[in-house]
Image 1 (cartoon, rainbow, N blue to C red):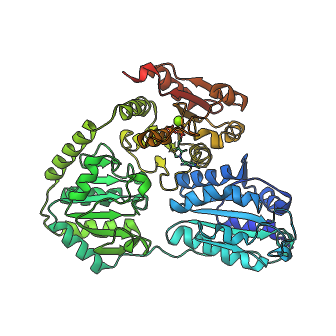
Image 2 (cartoon, helix red, strand yellow):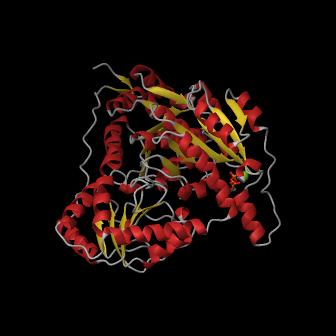
Image 3 (tube, helix red, strand yellow):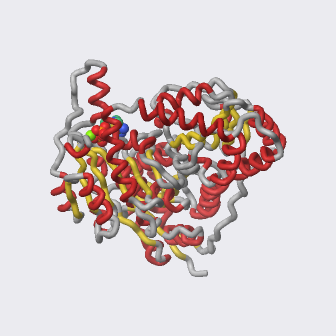
Length: 535
Ligand SMILES: Cc1ncc(C[n+]2csc(CCOP(=O)(O)OP(=O)(O)O)c2C)c(N)n1
Ligand SMILES: [Mg+2]
């Protein structure tokens, strides 16, 4: 075998793991990675800032189910990318960050090497499954195999490999090959029997599903219908049970009647969720009944919502086993009782909506019929998205993403770009506030360059409104929460996009539909004070 550089060998190995696209920003320290990108034919998407790269990789992972990959420089490349990596960590998304690093001999010396970052692996250790500084090329195949074991055989989370610029230049003669990832953990049959027994005996059961339960629709539906359990979801679990199902409470955990229903349930089946506060805005949800938890991560099973029946397993296998075990039992509670409870809770949820939430809901009511059912909606941390959690119905899973857990402003646009590139057959839209869009608005240039037919809704209330509301409520003077926004239409046009300001409900619907087939992204500004939103 003819020797290639370590940088090229890394990309060849990633291509063998079926990596077809990377999100990155080149630098002199990572040039050899780019030789590998060129030789393997992997598509390179050039971000405008590494924060965009990591968020695009996250969006790509969500849309494809495959790890999103970043190729970035060390030092500022890594610190810029930190936000997207940390978000993927919070939301259990697979991501492989391949970064450069200063030459190995300079590490820890403080010599002022270019892009010097003291103990770079430690910088990302807190928000990755593992972060390793590679010293010898021979370490690469094992560490990449370990990364894929995390992605495919456990709770997926980001992995960061730092490759010093001198290591990237070293010759590699061996032909590196992918290794098999472990199978997912299967549920203990005794635990499934105990869970089924308890569910059959429950009088007022409730099921709560998160992102880890994606892919469990069939057994979830069977279990819910068998025991008449209302099904509540987190943002990440939205659409696993279709919104139109008579037992679906959707993602309404922000609403008080749904919170009360959860508190009053005598047994809760909690699947694939850490029940993050970003989904309900409370310090802790009240749950008085016992909890049966299914989670791939054993740490979760003893967390702040401890399980009476802790089942460590792949959610799909566990739910299928549970559905079969329940089919052999006669449940205490029936389907019609559950459906009556759901109707009652949804009615009370609707009655408690504020005027502002009704205005937000109107936006979603216009958007829903304008968007195909399989549209991926990437939501930023804006009030219209918080309301969308419960007001935007989803019939399919993996279509609604709001990362309330890490809650980083600016995530929606790059995530939408990554999703659009990863799943070109799927419609994708981004929704961000006037504050949030400014964090990553530069990536409109990336989307334009990639000719993405991406509608980008900017919900403009001339404020960091969520914080304004908090200050007003606590009678704190409004400091630093009413930034002057640019002319969004002019800004987007200068970055190579179409742009418009919605002038009516019909105009908004039409603009979104046109944008979904356009030759470039379209920024659509929607002003909160639009008179037509009052209707
Ligand atoms: C990176 C980051 N910085 C600060 C915050 C705190 N924060 C949460 S919501 C918010 C206001 C966002 O304003 P905008 O995007 O206009 O949405 P709105 O609340 O007005 O709907 C801020 C500053 C955050 N979530 N993320
Ligand atoms: Mg705002």
